Image 1 (cartoon, rainbow, N blue to C red):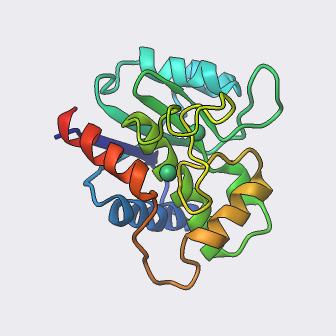
Image 2: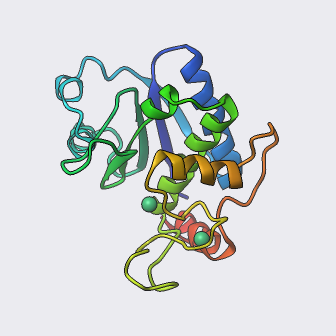
Image 3: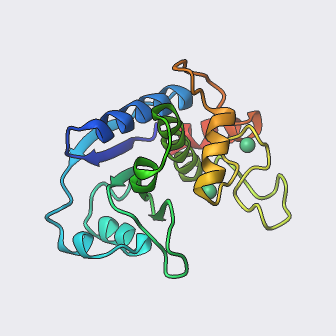
Length: 196
Ligand SMILES: [Zn+2]
Ligand SMILES: [Zn+2]
């Protein structure tokens, strides 16, 4: 059975409470267990300097935190790619970097923030365990994503799309709901999760 670790900023504040709730919700929806560790990345010079998500993910990967296991690192800074001034995060091997900066700083209700973060966690863990494939739809554009509008492996490309998806599909009424994956992606996720 695969192991999943989520590293959260070692700060006890309102943003941490929101993230904590999202992690709990993702755990429940995915029906898997996570190890959760607070981590202080502010002493790491490379991570302090860069805003490039790929570079940050590589820095964490090279840093040697559980690189053979699926690890999610949440950072509290805005991140970008070489081509765009914003992205949600980046992946290097099994090391996943996610930023909660824009979600925290956007005009969203607490329930929306939790739902948006939950989607990001579920989506990236879905990728890590090959939940979506490209054979299912196979037009090349949706490689490793799902076209099912209710499935968390559907791709979102902006904060607006993320909020809309989260509002549509994740609960915003304080009640947990199962069914983050469509049945196709769920089957694949369970298979790869069980055999890794
Ligand atoms: Zn994706
Ligand atoms: Zn799906």
